[in-house]
Length: 175
Image 1: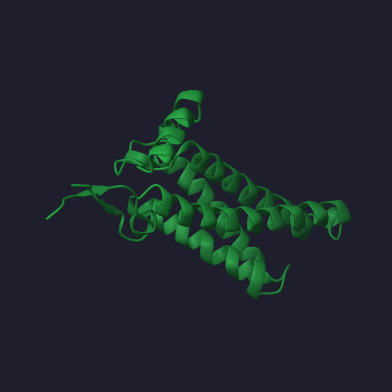
Image 2 (image 1 turned 120 degrees about the horizontal axis):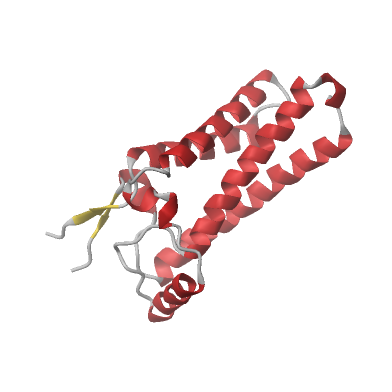
């Protein structure tokens, strides 16, 4: 029986899947600008802030300090991909971390522009802010699709289960 490695803690998984649900709901299901849209947007911003704070504390692969986005880390990841062998004892790769940071930034941009549009009377209906808000939402949608495709491709090509750890928090070690 193979042992398991803790990859993602409950806070990371809850924040991730909550943001997925909020984005799907706000982008595809409910009316833009309505009360539910606003509250879900503020909730998303609060979740991102929680995740940022959580990332400051030692919690394995969730630590922001674990974000190795440098030439050596990128080179190592490319080597792992060439060998079709991503280490089981790993969290995000350098590109994955860039995606995480972009996602957080876009959620915060959506919250700020949404707040400005709805809560600051002088900016209500401002077309530039509406365009920025829409651009941030559409960009978030695009990178979510890229993220899903990348997870599927890297899981297959790198011979590593990436989806189960986002559900259970655990990954089986290779024998």
